[in-house]
Image (cartoon, rainbow, N blue to C red; front, side, top):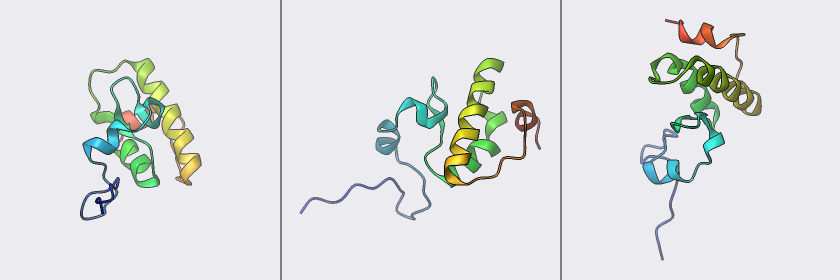
Length: 93
């Protein structure tokens, strides 16, 4: 019987392996052009918010769009977003 493929690492921490990431649609990422910061679970949404300012080589417009993607995914997965503007995430330390 073939081994079942999963989206998690062996430790089950909800991290995607490369093959799993390849199966996500572009719109399932905060930064779809770069395919950065997947938004496929509550933990990924929280991670995307925490790492928002670490994504490099993107324009302000791309950050604005990414923030909209994050807010949409946050609503879907029940994650609270206190920030009202992407700039609040970009300067959070």
